[in-house]
Amino acid sequence: MSKKFALLVAGLLCSCFMAEASAAAPQASTGNAQAPTLQINGFTAIVAGNAKQKDDTNGKGGGAHLAIGSSNIFFTAKGNSANGFHYKYRAALESYPGGKSTSGNSIYFTQNYIEFAQDSWGIFQAGNVVGPEDTLVESGFNLLQGANTIDGTFTNLVNSAEGVIEGVQMYGQTSKAMKVVYYTPGIQVAGSPTAGVITLGLAFTPNTTRFGTGGKDNSGATPDNAYGNNAGIYPDKSIAAYGVNNISMGANYKVDFKTWNLALAAVYIQEKAKRGTPRWVENQNVQGVNDGTLEFFKIKKVHHTRATQFTAAVGSGAWRFATGFIFNGRARLPKTASYGYKAGDAGKAWNIGGQYTIGAYQFALGYFNTSRVLPKVPGRAGANPAYGAVGGRATSDIVSATIDFNALQGLKFFGEVDVFKMRTNANYAKFMGNTNKYTSSSIVPTTKNSGAAVIVGTKLSF
Image (cartoon, rainbow, N blue to C red; front, side, top):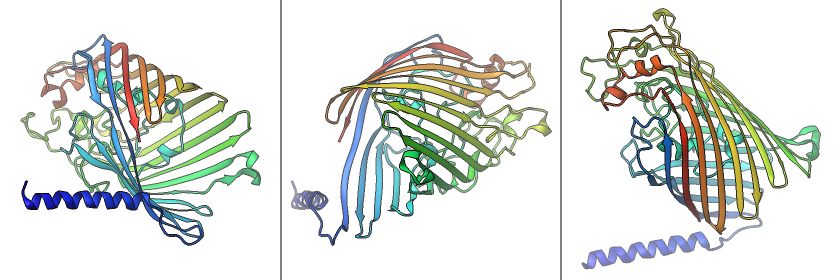
């Protein structure tokens, strides 16, 4: 070992030790004031699963699935003043499952924000952080744990029918894109705690896209698709519409009746939806070329986003039940009047779930339903493959059951069973089969699929 290398190692060890000691040691304070201290916590999970399904033509469900799930390390520095002013900085370092994200990075920061709070005026946040559409709602989806059901490992095992929407995502949902957020302090109804408390939230996100075909993107430092942009009816996110000047606002009402409690929430999102000018060339195998032979995807003008969500939850003792409804309207869909097409709608979804906790065990059962009116597109006999007139709906029904066992402090084992049925218009599947997404991979879209997925795993938190 060289002298320079030894000195470098010694310096790093010394720095780490000093940082750890500084984070753990109490800081000098005046009254209730507390200088910022550093806290480090996080989690990792490993999952295994398999699916028995009727359609495995797209490569999913052909064998056992084994992977490290989402893993995060959170760095939080927070302090407070003598008069109750709180301030905090937080960053979340995430390891992308599979070792590589769409930006080419295996590790990146998904949260990176600063927060100021005062009991009398509320909470203000700025940075890469979620908004009211994530923090204020509690639907049936939130009661199911396991491997995160339809928003987790399930999507890696199952071939979804073409055009089926994600059941727990609103259009315009910004996830952890760059934004400013404000939450009011709890407002007591009728001035009495027994009448319940209302919390209001408001967020502004300048730009929700991580791809799109043009336009300013100030939602983060790396072009990762983990932020806020859903492909929807478009073949892939590289040509999907995106949003600017996104505003999400929500209200949450909670009341505790001692023997039972109630929580209600409503969220509304609006944004100016845009599409850039697509690039079309004859060679569909050129990287970045997006389906120039299909007139429907050449349409540039799109409907602005207007999406709403309503949730309700009630609990008593070890039991808790919740439900949620999402209405996406025509968010980000092409304005097709001049082309003779109809774009359908951006879909709606609802869910209901129940949860029971006994000792170290937590059991949950939930049902999810999604429905989207598909575009109406004239048939094209000369296409390859040929397709008839497109119309109808894309729907899904999913029942999920989860069990979580908190074996030790910070150590949890979980299991999940998902039974599903998905279907779409056969001509729509053939129509999408013309897009570069499928022709370049020599695979065909899924028209209908049904079956069951079983997932088990363990999660370690610290």
